[in-house]
Image 1: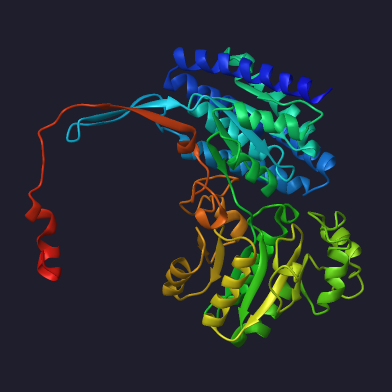
Image 2: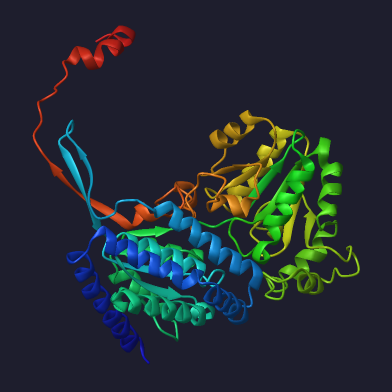
Length: 467
């Protein structure tokens, strides 16, 4: 198939989606939108389907592990359904007599969603549910390795749609083989783009001419200060770093530990499977053998990761992840960047202020805007990080990869796409959620005028500065 034929294929798919969306909206209701979202949620959450999707995802991408993907598919979807329950996305959503403005919910239209191989079921399911909840159609463009899981997920969605009489053209995908030309065409002719994954795709989304919601690079840095509950911090970091073999953009990539508790913290880390490695050069050579991340290490189980790094004989047999001591930050020091593996960089800081400075340098290199973590009993320090660092989230005393994308014990929206604000080159600074998939039409009525006198506005300024 040549480029012209590939573009024609995408045009046909989007045209079908657009026709389906127009009817979905014209004949829509809150009940219909909610039912379609529920159908898509059950398509991935039904236990047998969930397991099959998890197994297929690991088998075809070679990333992550089945048990954790089952958990992720379930909890991310359940949390999203909790978040959107009762939310009005059809008809009048606000009516303010004081301003005279009535807001009526309207869909975006056709959503074009580029989804990564790291979460080939959970991420598209999240996007599908949000799109349907707000009256949209959606066309997915999976990564090449994620095609198989995406195809099966859509089959499950369409099976649920058949039960409720919903149009399958509302949820479609760009078929194999994937190509840059196909994805580019989808970016250009959709009404809204949602991109999670490679920064190359993010850049293309923002330059496509279509409104885009695309997220920045992860490279989570976590500070452990002298007031932290070291055992709890170690347990949470271990649980987060090893979950789904560190496929999440919210997995800890660097630990910055203050000197006063450095040795004690490493002792706690060792108890939960975190082994310290001091030979930085050896790890770098194995992890980036040709200047690119070693695929034998990326998102692999601990035994495979250790074998690929040649560390089996140098760490305890129960090692679940490794922390590599380093001081370097920047392009010449790849350990300071994202590693997508059970490997974290380990920095020693004299005190909290030094830890903050180290974290700032890491974020200046990679991961600005995404999130940082803090294990501390000093509440004021979280505010210090929020005020001084280029970050949209400060995760306090939590397992970072669980907390960042929404958890049942915090207030963040459940999502697999974290906006990074202007620091990360993004149009949003919060977790991608249902509100981003909806727009409103405003009815504007005349109200009694309120025009302030100049004195009301400028009296204070005149007093301080003169007229």
